[in-house]
Length: 111
Length: 116
Image 1 (cartoon, each protein chain N blue to C red):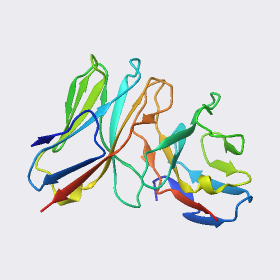
Image 2: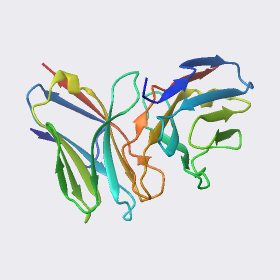
Image 3: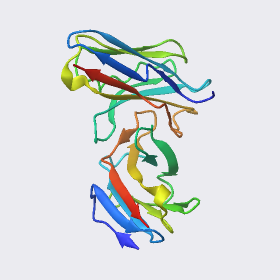
């Protein structure tokens, strides 16, 4: 698999590889985190979320990891497929406040 | 359908004109958000409505921007005296919020605004 640094705007992987997309969040009081996928010309779609009382959550082919100590969130995609090509955004909020989105990472999957 | 509906899907206007963008959230969703997304950029928070609480307007970029929401239903984002830098996709999202616990946001397809 391929891991990126704190935040890179683009990530290119081969089909079948594992992808890791990273996100640094800013508010230490944030208690809810969420990843979205946005395909060209469409609105963002929910992938997976996690609350601050957890450090890992798994979905179908995706895993979100939360490290509150360094305020870091990551999205792992297993066996990346061409259909996973999109822009991925992380978002954070504190209860009752607006959900704020981070900078996106463009994932390109080649066959 | 049961999703978030936005209209118009595309709007071309002349500089200086006012525009209104409409959002129909998912029925029963108490939270409603507006975001702006410029070409190739991330989502910029504009305004957040949550039930009967005062809206969070902290993201509105200038006093030319305003938004209203009627109860827990339709919201309208109004941009007065449009400028070319207002050109963007305006995304609306709604969420079912239980108390102060945030849930998944469901996004509409957006309204693409082009100011000539």
